[in-house]
Image (cartoon, rainbow, N blue to C red; front, side, top):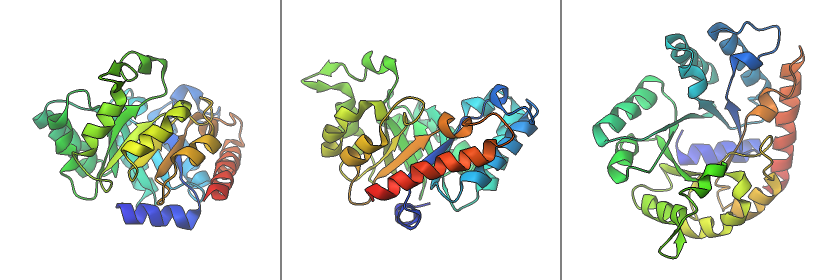
Length: 266
């Protein structure tokens, strides 16, 4: 899905909701087996319940890779089930020397066939460029994250500015708003004004809404640009809104609440 298609989908659905498929077998409702097959069935139920109100799905690959070869198969089947109607993110946080990054990019873009992948910029330009070489695919670079450990490196003062600001400026020059996004945690709402001054036209993937306490209102008011420019991810607050037989209905209702609020900001 290219930029124009993504923007069109957001405008048509009046939503910039991304549903995170961080599917933990141990948290499945009692009617599901704690197996790869159970994970797939649960994913399909969640997709059916939320597809009309979200524009994207984010597959956290760790939850699938921990299941071995069958887990990768579940990811493939989940991507196939979603189809081409939604923007699909592999939340894999890859990043290595150039030839290794190229293999990662091939695995996720050519084999798994997702639209985008999250990557770490720590190793610099040559670790990111291979991902950017795939046409109509997106590289989503970690910018300012919502975890406590962000203070260890990302927020360090470096030549008069936080390190993450240097990352945003530098990485922005490696690609364009057509193939680059940045991860910015919703719990860092006070930083969105400066972030938008650095990358005014890029999409931002924003985790941290819902279970982590970020404010959708604050993010929408401070970070939206002329093309909306936001994908707000919600995982646990939708996936596990209910552990009973009505889990899909409750997930649909929760996703609908986020979409309805988003519509008021567009």
